[in-house]
Length: 133
Image (tube, rainbow, N blue to C red; front, side, top):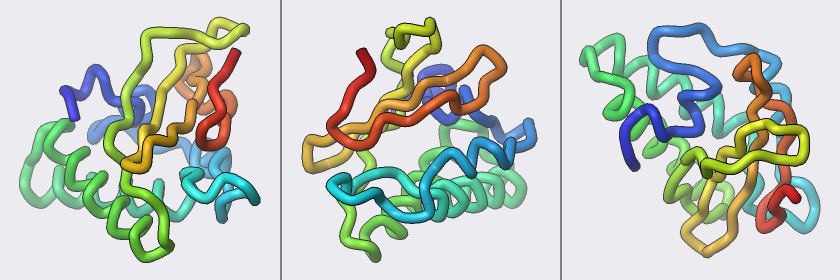
């Protein structure tokens, strides 16, 4: 994982800003049929809680706390038979509406794209393997 500036989650939250519950609600409770690696609300909550705990207890900067969150997220995913997250990074590209794209890349080679709206909220999610056009 690279520094906070390149983290997809930095577009959604940081250790110093509140998390928008609407962003969590944008993720499904369970992967949709045909997309077994799709990021879910439960793993994002797990990531967020572990990250914030690390920052509060250990005083970790965002990048270190975010990695603690990813580790917890991957444990959650493993318990559900999902491939681990390798990276959650901004792609430097945009969708047709001009929203920056964050890509969640998984160890099995699949990925999921998340469009980040101008207000830093989740605009839309393309399930694993699908990219925005």
